[in-house]
Image (cartoon, rainbow, N blue to C red):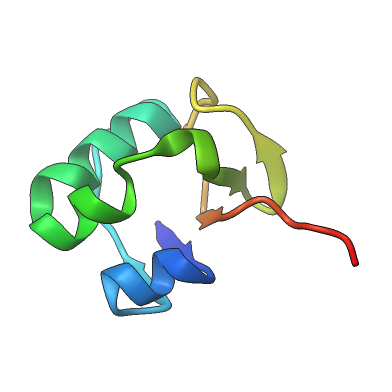
Length: 81
C-alpha cells in the first residue's frame, strides 16, 4: 500500500511517501511496524496523540482496518487561521 507523510512527519522521516508491504490488520499495527523499522520512524510516531490518519482519504482512528486499503496518510491536526 502507499503510505503518505505530511508536514513534520515528512520532515522527520525524510520522504513524502513510500510503498509499504505489510501484514498489519489495523492502522495501529502498521504504526508499530513502521516504528520498528528505524529510529526516524520511531521519532516521527512517538506521540500519536498529535497525529491524524486517513485510510483511502477517509479520516479514521488507530483501530481502523486496513483490509483492502490502497493508501494510508499520516498528518498533524489542521489548525485554522
